[in-house]
Amino acid sequence: MYVCPMTQPTLTYFDIPTSRGEECRLALFIAGVPFTDERLNRAQWEERKASSPYGALPVFTSEGRPPLAQSNAILRMVGSEHGLLPSDPWESARHEALMCSVEEMRARLGPTGRIKDPAEKKLAREALATGYFPEWGGQIEKQITGPYVGGAALSVADLKLFVALTPILKGSIDHLPPGIFKPFSKLLALVEAVKAHPAVVKWYAR
Ligand SMILES: N[C@@H](CCC(=O)N[C@@H](CS)C(=O)NCC(=O)O)C(=O)O
Image 1 (cartoon, rainbow, N blue to C red):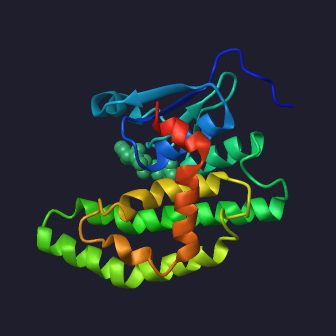
Image 2 (cartoon, rainbow, N blue to C red):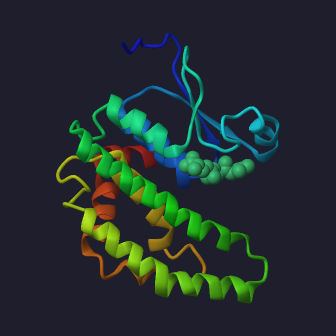
């Protein structure tokens, strides 16, 4: 049985408005869970890294529980506790599979950010833009019922897609044209629907 903790839980991440920690913060906020929004700088993180479960952030801590790491596990926990995942286990697992696919996409894109040589980086990103991304976008498109992944109800998978795709759609990633997702109308409509969701608007207006 779930026992409500006496102190509010903490979501620990970096002070950046993108990526894995942001989607967890957004999910907690939308779920209406009061939480401590702990933001570490690099020096603070280096001190804590070795004692974190998997040497990476985000980490979610709640009284009486072991710390929970891995963004998808945190999102699944918040989503299933607070109605941001479907109650049907199979449909819920389909949402989780999509979140795994977003992590796979990040695993392809992330290393290109660490390429030092500008020409090499450009080539790597252009290869993703013409090969990997159109294929990935097509796979995700097929998973979307519309406007959200599961239809009318917002889920943590929608939040993850929104956070992961926004920098690309804004053209913030060098050599990734913002138009790479243009053929995927459901995907683009989903991002717009999440952006316009009243709770999401409220989170970014804080
Ligand atoms: N699979 C993990 C990946 C976590 C991850 O790579 N986190 C990055 C920030 S988005 C991090 O902690 N980087 C700092 C480090 O690895 O020291 C998840 O989904 O949470």
